[in-house]
Image 1 (cartoon, rainbow, N blue to C red):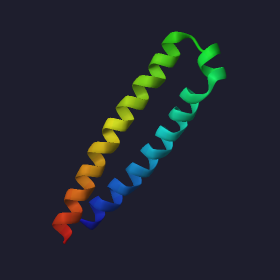
Image 2: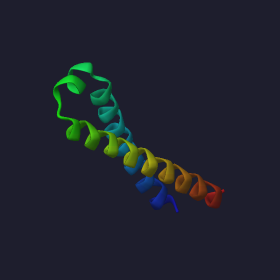
Image 3: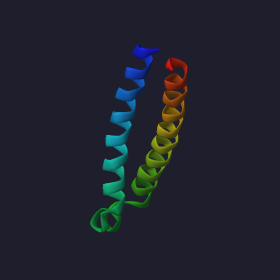
Length: 69
């Protein structure tokens, strides 16, 4: 369980960085004004997908923590 918990922690850190980067990009007015709509939509899709995955990983991590005691 410890090994899996470490793996999940590492993956959650990477996803958090990716989410932060995508959120900064999407909150940048210059990016939104200059980027083609399909690029903006793709970034929004990435953000939604990563958010969902991070939520699932957090749930799995909490479950492992419960099992570890």
